[in-house]
Image 1 (cartoon, one colour):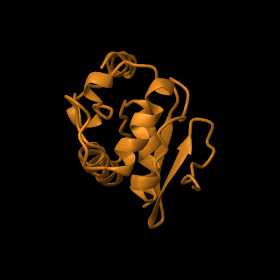
Image 2 (cartoon, rainbow, N blue to C red; image 1 turned 120 degrees about the vertical axis):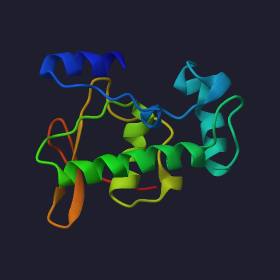
Image 3 (spheres, rainbow, N blue to C red; image 1 turned 90 degrees about the vertical axis):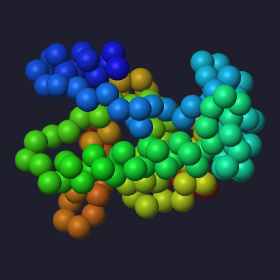
Length: 143
């Protein structure tokens, strides 16, 4: 929200908070260092309906985020204006599977763009594409 508010003030547009853009709710594990959580994240990816203690399952997160991202893509395509969405690294890691039609079980549990990175999602012809803020294409991970 803080980042969205700064951007909204800078470009003089309203922000619309939406919980669907929140990162994967890992419950009691939220805020811990990612390298400490890797085995747990792999387990949750292998058992996508298993719920993180006091959190949500991978499938719950994916359904929540993908529904909102696809809605934003439709709105952007129908609009003459740009739409900006602020999200977390987990959302960035997940976006290519949603936008490019990849396998959600192949979304990496670590890595991703650096803080402050930007993805540009746009429709070219009949297909959607993702580029980074450096305008390099984003591809699905090969696992």
